[in-house]
Length: 288
Ligand code: FAD
Image (cartoon, rainbow, N blue to C red; front, side, top):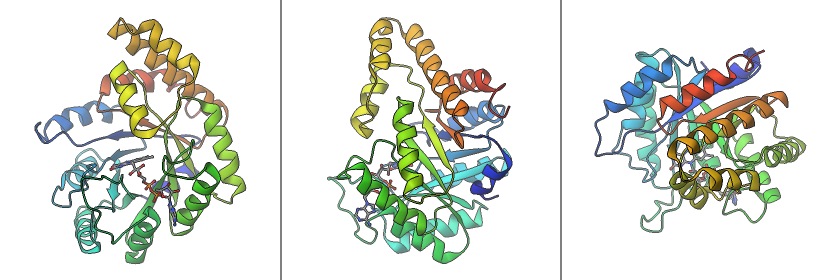
C-alpha cells in the first residue's frame, strides 16, 4: 500500500520509527520491540538505515520485510545515498522489491568527514529520481521545520525541498521539534512554495538528559524555555524526567491534532513502553 494514500483515508496518520539493533546486540531484540509496537496499531512503521550507509548491511531490509510479512503492518524502509554507488543502491532496491517492501524514505544521509562520499549522489532529490525511474516503489522524503543544518536559510531549504518533492516524493516526515509554532510557520511557508504532499510531524519523546543533548547536537533543534525549565526541574529524577517527557510529547501532539496536522510520526527510540503511554493518551482523539 502506498503510504501517501493513507492520508486520504485517515484524519491523522499515526506511525512509529524504529532502528535496527546495534551490531553488538542480536537482531532478535527487535522482534520483542515489534511484538509490543504491533498492539499500538500504527498505520506504518519506518526502519532507519545505518548512519554509515553500509550497503552490505541488510538489516533495514530484513526488519522491514518482517514488519510486512510477519506483523502485517506497512513498512517504510529508510535509504541513504551519499555513501553508496548507484550499483549498490540498485542492489538494495532489488532486495527490497523481492521482499515486497514498496515504500522508501529516500534520504541523502549525513556527510561523515571520516567516510569519503562515493559522489554518485549529492542530494536526496537525485536518489528520488533514481528510484522513481524504476517505477516500482512509492517514495517519501524528509523535511526540516527549522531548516536543515547545512542550509543557508529556511527559504533556500524550502526551495530545495520543492525540487525533491517534484522529483517524485509523495509524502514528507519532519525532523523532530519541540516548539509547535516553528512547525506551523514552516507549514505556511512550504504550502506557499507549492509543496502540496502530506507532511507528518516528527515527535520525539525525551526521556533522559543525555538523549536531548545528543539530539540537539545532531539535528540542531531549538529548545523552548518551557522545555529546558522542565528538564532542569526534573533532571535529578530519571522517573520524573521520563514522565515529564511523555507529558510534553502528548501536549505537543494534542495541539498538532487540534491544528489539523496530517500525521504524527513518533520516534520511538525502540522504547515500546514510552510509545504505548503516548499512544494510549492520544487514542481517544487521534481520529475523532
Ligand atoms: P537533502 O534533501 O538532500 O538535503 C540536504 C541539504 O542539501 C539541505 O541543506 C538542502 O537544503 C540541500 N540541498 C538539497 N538539494 C539541493 C540542491 N539541488 N542544491 C543545493 N543544495 C541542496 N539519516 C540516516 O543516516 N539514516 C536514517 O535512517 C535517517 N532517517 C531520517 C528520517 C527523518 C524523518 C529525517 C528528518 C532525517 C533522517 N536522517 C537519517 C538524517 C538525514 O540523512 C540528514 O538530515 C541528512 O543530512 C539530510 O538528508 P535529506 O534527505 O534531508 O537531504
